[in-house]
Amino acid sequence: MYADAYIIYTFTAMNKYAVIVAGGSGSRMGAAIPKQFLLLKGRAVLWYTLETFLSAYEDLQIILVLPVEHTETGLSLARVTRDPGRIRLVSGGLTRFESVRNGLELVSPDSLVAVHDGVRCLVSARLIQRCFEQAAGLGSAIPVIACRDSVRRVEGTEAAISSPVDRSALRLVQTPQTFRSEVLLPAFRVPYHPGFTDEATVVEASGTAVHLIEGEDNNIKITTPIDLVIAESLLGGV
Amino acid sequence: MYADAYIIYTFTAMNKYAVIVAGGSGSRMGAAIPKQFLLLKGRAVLWYTLETFLSAYEDLQIILVLPVEHTETGLSLARVTRDPGRIRLVSGGLTRFESVRNGLELVSPDSLVAVHDGVRCLVSARLIQRCFEQAAGLGSAIPVIACRDSVRRVEGTEAAISSPVDRSALRLVQTPQTFRSEVLLPAFRVPYHPGFTDEATVVEASGTAVHLIEGEDNNIKITTPIDLVIAESLLGGV
Image (cartoon, rainbow over all chains, first blue to last red; front, side, top):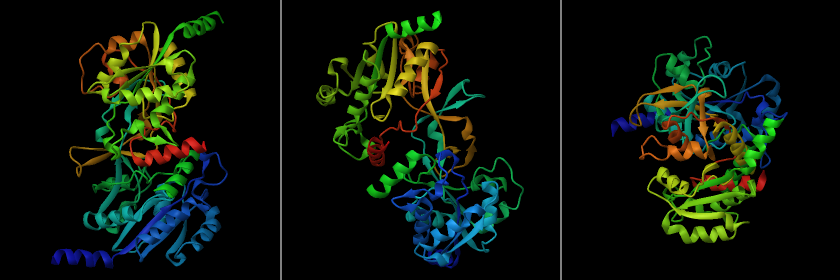
């Protein structure tokens, strides 16, 4: 009982940050507008992401990382959220690693930090909370889901040899990838490496194993026009 | 020129079959109705699949494999398609392998055979045609798409150790998996093996490599209630 109460006290006292990365140029959408600013029922994709994080915890601070040319758009989006005072803007870098590192400069010690894709706008407040709770106890929480399709591995170029892969051992990785700051901050004090595909791989490169938790089927990334249609129906229908 | 004309002549003369497997019990949907019979805009999921295959080629024959207890429902669905005379029903087995093998008993030599998941009801006629064309020339055509999420491999049980996987080498496998009959029929004359997760793995076990082609993002499997919402919006919106 005492231990539980202590953990709850510690958790409440810790700073909570969400570094929301929205650096995409939108080239895959065939649209001039970067995908984080595309409209879903009249609101930008990124607005939904910001709103859900703000609603997850009253004391959560958002660090929004955007390409410098989109600062104005980012500010105007932040202004129409429920609590603009909890959102700060930071300029993105050339890679996701650099963008996240820029965002982490605003994170204070003894914090919990969630790093999230701005285009995963259907994330639920409940998943955000589970990530923070698990990361507080275990150092990290990486949401993953099972892979529902059969999977094959191709060797070399496109038309080449392929072989089946056991999908039961595979997990598709989502965000928010959430960490205690003493795990995440030191891991980012290294030069960029092409193996850094997400925050989990950066933390692992620093010698710390990461902890996987159950993600959400709905927590999709908006990367194609079809995804916008899907997201619109999920927002309305579920 | 002569060679092309010959291929076109051969292709036209070949029998075309689609073995549509709809054996699921629907347990993952939390519904009493098996997922292939759930309604999308007032029509069963399986109805859309049947219609699209019938529309792909005037001379394509469908072999619909259903659990014996769903024969009546299957027949009544077939009756409201554009051409019920091209649909025959066959009873399913305990495994997908057995179900497909039952269906293949109705396939004549010198044919092209597509094996398709009944719950992939958003497949396009164009993808079906590309599968048949490629399989005619190359012996097989397995539609696959790139994996858009980061991927990890878990070792042993759930909370265990995991490691990143290079997703650029992975492909998610779809259906219709399409073959020349002289490749597919002999491959199925073996006892069931747990490694037979789809038709590609059966054909490979017979010593023949399979050929991958580009699938479609929309060609999803209806396995959760969310998928129904998604499918409904894709049917209406794209």
